[in-house]
Length: 91
Image 1 (cartoon, rainbow, N blue to C red):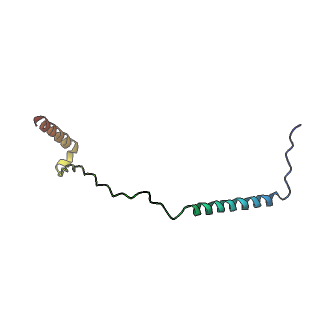
Image 2 (cartoon, rainbow, N blue to C red):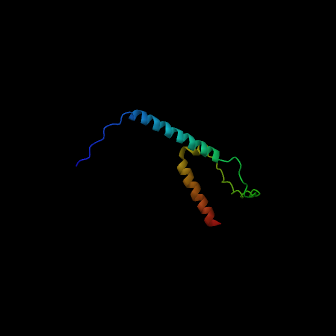
Image 3 (tube, rainbow, N blue to C red):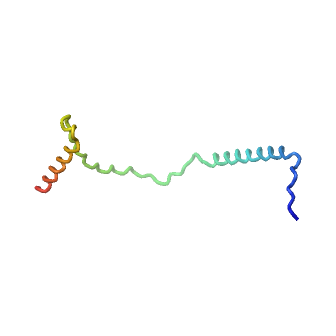
């Protein structure tokens, strides 16, 4: 025997509105409980002195590039790298 769809219950709109009010009240209650559970008092577990600052790494050397050199930056950088490599090999 096939299942017959149920006819809408009279007053289902009012039941829906009542259930919405109940769910809204539950959401408000949950929010209030969550807010109340966040205690303003905190237990201090331990107190430690601040750690010493880590030593700073040496700063990189800044090379100023003049306007004449800036015309061909790639060529300048390549020549500088090869010069530095030759100095490192010589040392």
